[in-house]
Image 1 (cartoon, rainbow, N blue to C red):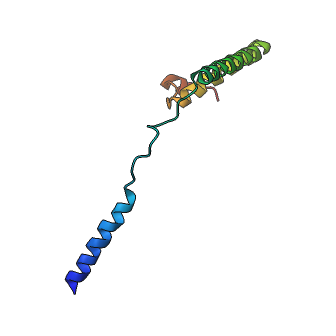
Image 2: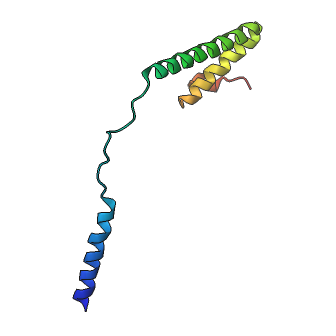
Length: 98
């Protein structure tokens, strides 16, 4: 009886794995051909959008008065430092205005 069960398990295991194998389809390998002209236009648009955004930020900063620009610069540097996961220098932490 146990041989019968082992044979059935073996047969089920072998027949179950054959369903996963598929033949290759005709007509091609991989991705469809990409329209290079479209991709180039897309990159140019992204570049222009990035440049426009940078110009808007620059203009926004130029409009502000000197104290505000200084505060913005300080906050920008602090944000960059936090992104890099670095602490303030020791003496700045020690002698910080509270």
